[in-house]
Image 1: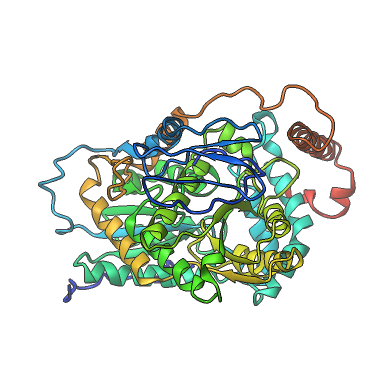
Image 2 (image 1 turned 90 degrees about the vertical axis):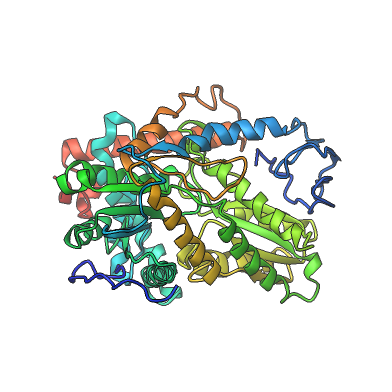
Length: 524
């Protein structure tokens, strides 16, 4: 999840005024050739028969298909209901104080701040294990039952020690550390310049969730600089409990404990995957990489998103899957406008542990595509705006090697957005659009796809989100033999229960191999 424009450890001076101005996809349906036209979208799958459904009255982002494998029609209304159910609560929010938006100047005498939130990453190999501990100690990453939450840190220590050696190998292969801080600092600098060029002087700060500069460090610098209006902008295009949600929960706890922050007006942009500038920037990069292939029209566009546990979506109401599928659809629509009609697919990477994650999995999908005769593949890291371990090592090394072994002859990869000018300018526009709503009411129009400004205070954003969480029955109620969904679910539960029992025994008796390894005494 660092330095910002102004290093949190140093004093800052403010600049003078600027002088210049989709629904579930069966595992077997891996591939979607592009539609013939926007009014007649014909969807087919490699190796799977599908009846084309033509309906000119459907919205452009609707995919209506009937699979011979037994999956029912994916109706446009169901997709819309799903998006509304999961996404709209994040986009129709109240800030803490009501005021007349139209009469309020954008800047005036206010000191504007922008807080960029990101994951953070170890900058040296020595940072890897403590970074992993911070990651797994987050209850939004590993969700323990309330009764066992006292084991959060011991479990995080246990997992981080076990995973550190393999993780160090990965970071060593990309230069000995994550470039995320350096890239995020550069994005902050470019965003500040873009805001200045648009006549909105502002300070831009970087707050990482799991490594330096921590969010707490950025907040302290914001207070020292006397910021009076703050725009919180997570650098995650799509909202998820485990990314933006975790960072916003941390901010909520910080805000509640600080009188200065309680009185400081702020607003949050929880997701921005629908913004026109972001979509065009992604499309530009894809188009550029396609031109490097001998036969660009034969290339399969392979969107790979970071996965989340399936329970987050099905049990906790995480909107991530719905937002990701709509994001892919919007990019494909933009490609279609440019007469690029390549086949494409979406899969999820980076799963950890025995529990079930969002499917289809990236590695399994690559193997299946090779079996189906795909020879040219262009990987698109759809949920990442910066290069880091998941792109530089997992995609560029592991998945590329897997693809070549699976029969894919030509592999390409779209770079992360980084400081791409269209992307940075669009982020600046998002910040500017949000300023009149700091302390006001705003409702963005999701269906019309207007400029996305889903605004709200941190506390109210999370309150609205929590109110929408659904209590669902257990996804599996009976045992089924074999490598099935139920087996995977129950295996995960059994493994987690075994780990919890082990930790309880270790903590209560003070004996065991965890104490012998020097892991648990840190928390006694």
